[in-house]
Image (cartoon, rainbow, N blue to C red):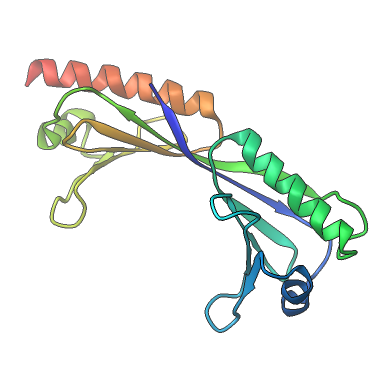
Length: 182
């Protein structure tokens, strides 16, 4: 079963911000240190997704557990900024989900060397001295699959959850076929 572990979305507000002023006005839920990073961090609760707001009006939501939570945090951000008269209305130019990060289990240990060859050297990267997982870019898929010897799988880069699930099903079949020959 494919489980979402992180949803990342981004949007654009039709305004430029003085982030120092915004952080001061918003208070304790905002953190801005331009010497460390050019964006302002905003977190509505300790375990809530992180929102990063940039001077240009671009913002990124990371750490959501679902698409719904990403949209909910977006709405809270827009309401907060509108309530504090930092934007004229609680609307943005656009917002979209950029990436689902999902995990799944194949239920068996994997021979990553055999999979590297079986999945095709042109579609895989496996350098165990640098990273313990096999990086697989399935042909025609808009995501990247990380396969680990434990059988754990990470799917990242998909903007659509159904595509991530379909990709896992295809990878599951490919791995099964390759390991049956091993």
